[in-house]
Amino acid sequence: MPTKQRNQTLKGKNGGLQLLLTEDVDHLGKQGDLVEVRAGYGRNYLLPQGLATIPTQHNLKLLESHKKRVSAAREAKIADLKAMADQIARVPQLTIEANANEEGHLYGSVGEGDISKTLKGKNLKVEPEMVKLEGMIKQCGLYEVDLNLGYDITSKVKVMVVPSKTSEKK
Image 1 (cartoon, rainbow, N blue to C red):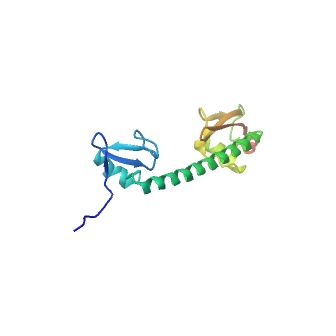
Image 2 (image 1 turned 90 degrees about the horizontal axis):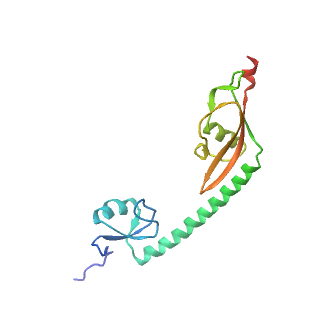
Image 3 (image 1 turned 135 degrees about the vertical axis):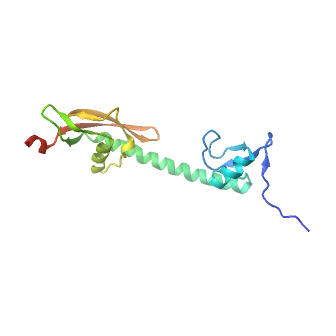
C-alpha cells in the first residue's frame, strides 16, 4: 500500500522546527523570515495563531503576493498621512473655548481629546493618541502642539485656548 504524502516539517540544524513567518513576531523575526523554533512553540502557538506556516513552494509564493499587497497598502496610507500633514500645516490656528476665571486659569483642562475633537471638526481625522502633549493645558494662551500621525510623519498645530463666552458673563 503506498504511503500518503503530506507536508513534512523541516528540521533545522539545531533540531528545531523550521517555519516561515507570515507576520512580524517580536523577538523572533520579520514577515518572510525562515526561522527555527522549538517544536512546541511552533505547533502550539505560531501555527494556530497564523503567525507562521510550513515553508513550501506554494506558501512562499503566497507570502510574496501578500507582501506586495501589504506594502502597497502601507504606501497608500503613508501618502494619505502626508497629505493630512500638509492640510494641518495650512491651518493657521485652532481656537478652543474653555471655562476659565479672570486670571485665565482653566477650571478644568484641555487635553488630547479636546484637540482631536477640534481637528475632527475641521475634517482632519486626528485621533487623541496622535496628539503629543507634555501635560494638560491648564491656562489660557497660545500653545504649539506636536502631532505624530504615524509612520514617522509629524506635524505641528497652534492651539489658542480662550475663555468661553458663558464664563465671561458671570
